[in-house]
Length: 349
Image 1 (spheres, helix red, strand yellow):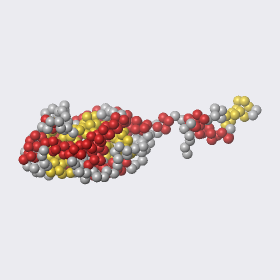
Image 2: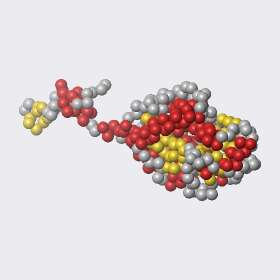
Image 3: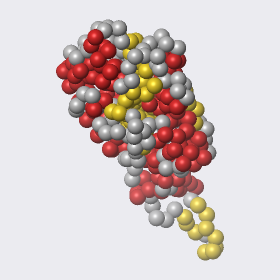
Image 4: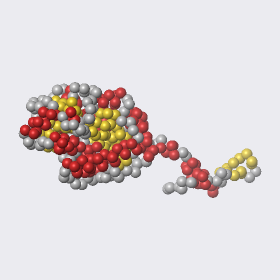
């Protein structure tokens, strides 16, 4: 049952009447019993209701396999949400179709704050332009909750390849058209589009090999099935540190402070850069107070050393911004990548 918003204001001030013969004894008038209950409920502050959230586990849909940046971030931030609010956070990996299957599932769930999703530039602002049909509208079907980080992609190779820099990779690809095999997380995904932009600017040909996620890319590359890969550095970092993969360059516009000896692509191809972002989103229609609660909790978690340090070491630039800032970023990048897709002549798949 729903009561008018002004019920509390319209409640009578005197709901009690004296019992005849005794001025000291008061008894609630039977005819006003229901009205008293209604007024008490209506007068209850909204914060009392908001404090009930969360009252059950929260699910985070990660639209990629374990090992992807979104998976790593969610499994680090999730326990901090649990510590703050006392409810478990369940990471639900739903890979497939370059991340669109998981987001489709999230878009169809109730906007009650108990299902979140991990969105990133690829499946939010790139795929809607590179796939013929995406089963969600990133601007209408989701509400931004918390921007976690921006990042730069990394170009890595198998240690046996005959090039040790991006400039040498480009020279090799020009001399051997179509022989350079490069793995990404899917046809028309953000890393694929980033490498297509590089191909266009540097004028070479290569063989694209799409995979379902970072773990599979790294496995195939370490096994020598492909020559190179472009992906978020977070999932590749352990293999670079172990020496099983060779890091050629980052797509950031300037060198990274934690990797001062590693070049950036723009040193070989002036003006080139490609950066992405990651963040938590929710089905559209979620209450603003729940978004605010989650935004504050996630932003606080990003400051904690056991969350901050591994993410920064993995190549992420952590962010602590409002949901409104995140929403503006999504809309701006949606327009930007739409233009890039048209400029390189990519045909939706």
